[in-house]
Image (tube, rainbow, N blue to C red; front, top):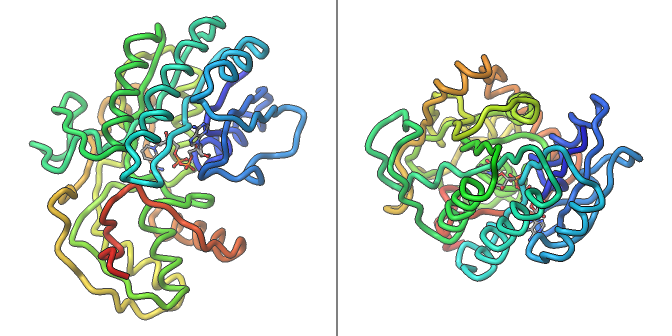
Length: 313
Ligand SMILES: NC(=O)c1ccc[n+]([C@@H]2O[C@H](COP(=O)([O-])OP(=O)(O)OC[C@H]3O[C@@H](n4cnc5c(N)ncnc54)[C@H](O)[C@@H]3O)[C@@H](O)[C@H]2O)c1
C-alpha cells in the first residue's frame, strides 16, 4: 500500500510511518517541520519526504499526482501559537482543503483525519462524551480543526475522522507530560489545574490507526480509553519517574478549560475490537526515557492558559 501521511515528521505521523514501513508499505510524507522533526523519520527507500506546507496547493497536488497514494492519513496541523488565527486557518482549513482535494483528484481510496476532542468545548453535556454530542469548539486550534473535519466529511468519499483523547508517548512535544518534564528539569514552578483527561499511549493509537488505514469503515470514531485521570495524578507520575518531589501547586482550572474529558469509545471497541492496554506508568516511563535521551527542552501547547503553568512565569 502507498500511504500519504501529512504531518508525518510529527509525533503521531512518524510513529504511524514506522509501523507502515515495518509491514512493507510505501510512505510519502509532507511536513514543513513547524513542530515535527526530520530525525523522527526513518532513513529508508520506502519513505519519500517532502519538506513543504500543505497550504501550498501546487505542492500538495504534485506530490499526490506523482505518488498516487492508496490512503491518506491527514495528521498535519498547526497549534503552537493559540492566538494565531490566520496561521491556523491557513494550515488547518486551507491546508486541509488542499489535502482533501488532491487526494480525491489522484484517486486516493480513503482519507483519515485526526480530530481534537476540544471540538466538544468547555461544557460537554454528558460524560463519557458521546460521538453525537454538540460541537462547541473554542480558540483557533479547535475551531479550525473542526472546520477541517467538515471539509473531510464534505469532499471525501471514504473518510474516517478519529476524535482523539490526549495521546502521549515518545516524540510528543505537546500536552502535559513533556511540559511537566521540562518544567521539573528546569526547576520551574509547576501549577496543576484541577482537571481530568482521557489518556492513550501512542503504540495503542498506532494499532488503531493501522486498522483504520486497512478498513473500509466510514464516519466518526473516538480514539480513547473511556477513563479519565486527574492531571495531578499524571503530574505525580512524571515527578516520580524523575525522582522529584511533587511540589506543584493545585490551581483552579481556567473557565474555558473543560473540567473532565472522557470520550465514549464504545463504537470503536465494537468495530475494531480495540482496547488501549498500556498502563499509564509504563507509557510515562517510555516518554520520559525519550525526553531524557534527546535532552528535550522545546515543547508546545495549543492552550492559551495551559494547566501546568499560570502563564505568569
Ligand atoms: N497528540 C494529541 O494528543 C492529539 C489529540 C487530538 C488531535 N491530534 C491531531 O493529530 C495530528 C498530529 O498531531 P501530533 O500530536 O502528532 O502533533 P505534531 O505537532 O507532532 O504533528 C503535527 C505535524 O504537522 C506538521 N505541520 C504543521 N503545519 C504544517 C503545514 N502547514 N504543512 C505541513 N506540515 C505541517 C508539523 O511540523 C508536525 O510535524 C494533528 O492533526 C492534531 O491536530 C493530536
